[in-house]
Image (tube, rainbow, N blue to C red; front, side):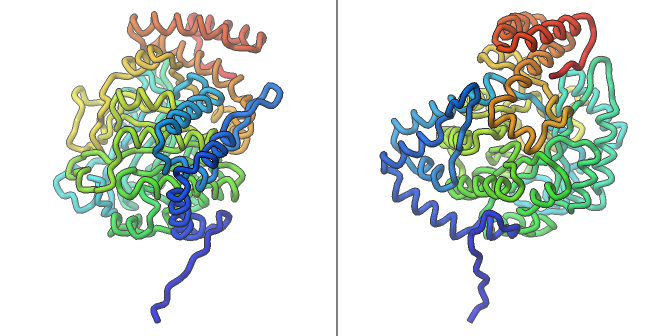
Length: 486
């Protein structure tokens, strides 16, 4: 008889096949399908997820992967309206109108993996390969600073020869060292391949913000087929990376699924199971969850993948992620169009990239280069245009990095977030960093809209002492001083 290893679901296990258990996902999807029209159960689930006020604090229980999957399976239009309304309510309770802005910085597209959905795969012989020197990193960072960016997510292909951990660490050091005019990168998030506990410790010592790693797909069989060669082929090593990162001292980790590779209901249940696992083992769930969709790239045709999702399904995924994991940051990149991003801002998204270039060395080029892009950028507006657009949507663009720099990370951040106390810091910090952008980088039209927004939002700071300090800080910024934070 063939020796088949059986795995049992255990969210506290450190084995990938046990905390992301295939049989448990199938059981969950079957349960959801059987109960998708059970309105009594559905209303109970929605009520459980609703924000509750205790004194002057707001709390949310979130949902289990099973409960959220029932809502995902439900196709009732009235229920969907309730889902969107609840997601908006939860988003408002914990993040208000703030939208954090960042940009990706591609360091190298050398890669030894054979991922069939990514143009950086090593079989692609006609894409130009490039790795930034430290002088080129400096030039890219200055270009980003001149736009007004304060927060970056560095990206690199997996290649132990061309992109060893020492190279990544050197780049981080270079990025933090550059102070150009009034510009400074205050937070570097890192999106690099799964690595060792020792290397995660080195990243922590380098002062990174969040460690981000997309799972791409949680379906093990599909994962191994989509990653036929290279170190990324090892499903367990990749899936267990967040546990090693936290063991290495990294407080904040970011999960992600590349929707379109596998069935979306399977991926949705699995990523929630991963969040539950992190909470159960480490006491803190994911700092962020990213929900990218497969996009066209150099030799990649998204139509080759038969699990693509339409915009309505995509919006439902975002809304239910907000409801199920209420405290996490949800990220939407420039993969998505302005129209799509506009809808998702209301129902869950709390972070967006702006003026992104997904090619190595792209920011120093006058014209957007496309020969080394990792994926097509749908939203190609300038950062000034993105900031103005957000404000016209009634949002507060935020370049804040204060929590990371004040040590409010991991469980410390989550405890403040879960009680709603984080609003006392985030709202004024958003206004401070927006003021910096308006003074240093904005066009006159954007500056006019922004000044009016700040004037209005000052009055929405409930604590009188905080409000007075904020007013003073805003005046100091007008006088040429920078980098105030609560």
